[in-house]
Image 1 (cartoon, helix red, strand yellow):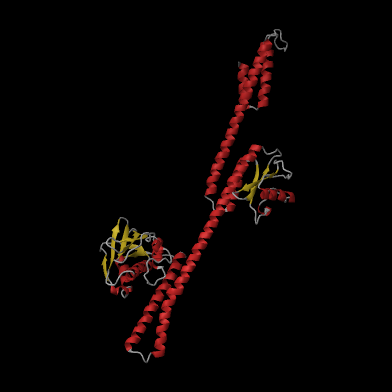
Image 2 (cartoon, rainbow, N blue to C red):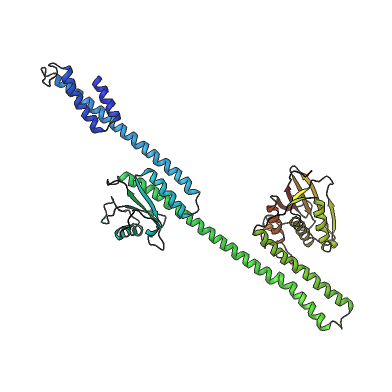
Length: 458
């Protein structure tokens, strides 16, 4: 039993050949030290042959099973390490949006598990570019390029250990995507030993995972580029529409009125001349607002720097009402601004422009003589300002779209470039606040903005 224990211990820690040798040596040692005549291999009683045969069979079975279990345990550890590495690699690949970063990560993770150098080659116009990575310190022979190109074109492994006619110092695995190979993985072992089939199989799994990540990233980048192109075309079309109509109309009115005054100024009645001059002033002012909105939208998109300070909200609202006095003359306007309202931390020019745009929108889309209300209050850690009207309100589902650039809802023939509310949204985002629109009970619309409060100055 002592010899059996020794065989088990050796089999647990050594290779199978050593454990089998230990089994044979243990039987010989038993014959030398435990069977008379001692210290010789001579057997006086041939019944011991049965004992020796049983011992040898038992020790060989034990050593074989122990070696097999140890080998399976090592394989399980290797598989666990591969699975863990593949899991970590998939997580890293999912967060990357650059193809070159994906290739670099895949090479680094593969080198963690393989004794050798691994580089991902990405083709340019269908050709392998070896100048983007070297598998050897010396210049790569032309045969290596041919083998790698063949692996890319045929989407099959080639090179070292594959058994193909194309032999090379490195193993080349194609990065097979859904439709075609997107690259080649080059593997150069540090030893002269052949790459084991299970290692090639695991490397192929990693190559397929890398190929899917590269293909997914390219598809996502292509979709994003197409979406940006579509948005650019849509914006260009909307801008062209705004320029061709909303800018041409006031220019035509100004040109017509000025031409009439120049050609028939002396013949016109004073009231007619005054109306033409009023028309020129009104259209010039409207043209100025359109151009101002276009410039403001451009400045906000480019990331304008805010000049924020603490201001009383009633001053900002009062200045906006004064600017819109002419447009609001045909409406009834009421304000409700509590005296104890906290100061708002804002850029007074931009915030004032926001209030002007909301008031202009309310005056434009509500009937003459209707009521427009400006109401402010403190709501938890923010100041809330609402502009309420009694107009037609919003079509269901339109509340979110009205803040898009160049979007115009039910215009009913009213002119505008569709930038006023988009500017309001950009201003509130710059102030880290919110703006939303919803229908008012009893008819009408409400525009509600909230700007976060800051610690009030002493």
